[in-house]
Image (cartoon, rainbow, N blue to C red; front, side, top):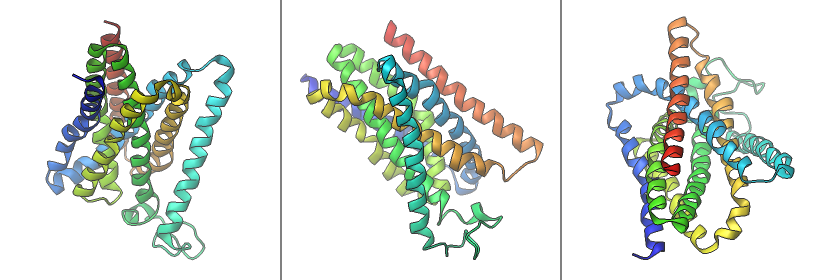
Amino acid sequence: MNLLILIIIFTAIGGVLSVMVASAFLLLRDHHRNTVLPHGISFAIGALLAVAFWGLIPEAFAEVKPGQFQVLSGTILAGILGFFMLEKLLIWRHCHYGECEAHNDDGYEHSDYHAHSHRHGVAKSAGTLIILGDSIHNFVDGVLIAAAFLTDVQLGIVTSLAVATHEIPQEVGDFAILLDSGYSKGKALFYNILASLTTVLGGVLAYFSLEDLHDSLPYFLALAASSFIYIAVADLIPSLHKKTDMKTSLQQIALIAAGVFLICSLHGIAHNIALA
């Protein structure tokens, strides 16, 4: 079979398959999903931070020379600041010059800020950012899958399956974030599938111009990492502080740790498969 066709098929598997498996989360009844949703947010925090710090950033630094470390670090910093400015613009758009229900007359937030954020402000923009960050991340996954196929077909197949497996827990967290941001189940599924198709785009572009993309790859990784760090730290973690009782706090910590552990474990499994 033509190598390009194989890359298209397996980048689609690597991107879309994980979304379809994770979409089982949407089949839960509303009251069950509302019960699970806060736990999904905690799990997503751990998964996003683990993907950024355990996967994307180390891979980015491994691809550049030591003399480029500061430039790459600057890219991560610029990405975080850029996503902050983007979120400001999104909040401004939703709040219409500070008149949205999330703010009082002085522009400061009410104590029930997050209770209304499904339609306005930070939570809505978090959904937009998670789609953008996922698109960048999936594009890079497509480049990596294509690179593996161009090296060896069997390695490409294993890499695509490893990517799909690695993405499932993160996609479950993404669904939780999108639903928490006010997206309907249909829109959450549609936008997640749309973002997953950038895996195919990355694979096709890499097939035709891998040498040109190779030099840019670390910076794509850095931008994807900065988006995940910003979403987790700026948007999701503050929402966990609404409940301060000991039981809930321990559950949050345990689920964050579970997200980190699962992502790190899957990275280790994928690495061992690649070396085998």
